[in-house]
Image 1: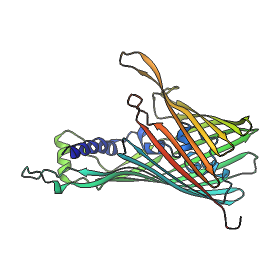
Image 2: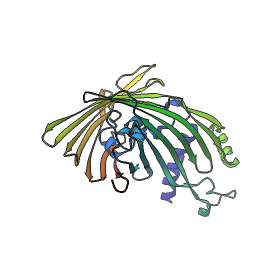
Image 3: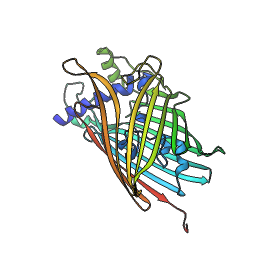
Image 4: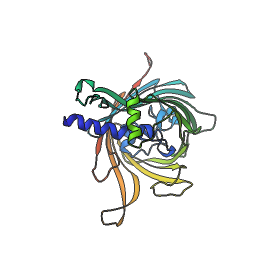
Length: 359
């Protein structure tokens, strides 16, 4: 019985967020988490330096950094003690010396949620056979294209993304949006910019709630959701990175990114009602381009402690990576943001480089 009560709590916590989270500030937030253990280890500071298959997510212009004919990437992560699963898979291909494409798929979901709305029948009897599992899942399918124009050091890229969000048989949404990115290498300094949702990504929601559930909503004073359009407002990520040699066979890459949002005041370092700036920093030490050690900080905020005193908090992350011939394995340990509980998650990602036969 405790198991069912626990899952019911999860269901009632998640379901309103899916149905009523219409505020643009929080729309499609699963696409703000990030992908790839390398990026997580560097606190998502990678928009300028990313140059592999994960560029399809972070900055499509970085796909021009792929030196092989093809790359395949995978990632798996679990949040909230394994309740939520976060998965990513992608494939990228060089078209020619000046262009590349990639297809990425992202899934964030809570599976096997027991539907207890029919647990008690009209006669007041408890019937566990009426419990049916369902999933609350978000999907993103991203098609990326990158090209190097005739301007030396400049690469450009764009994403077309389709969003699919479902809450069992109760609700679902389809969405579409576009991103644009650029990278510029100037005398070893790497500059990057990623404009997300430049067209204002929309999700068209439709609901199919049984009459019994609608009656409960009405009796408890909750709003009954109706078919609607949810919008995701644009955001801009800019960054600068520099890589240098510390000593023989040892390199250091340092990067700073700034996330700029325009959807009202947020609790970030630079904030106003018009524009908000959220900086994050990352470092990557490399030894012979085989072993990597990464660290970074993000989510820098001003908060009040239990005594009411204002304090500055931040989220640290770290990770490691190894590249053996054409296989790269990365790991990151990252806090999901709740610093009081320190809910750290383990992120693993894999990258495989593929060349045409005979190369």
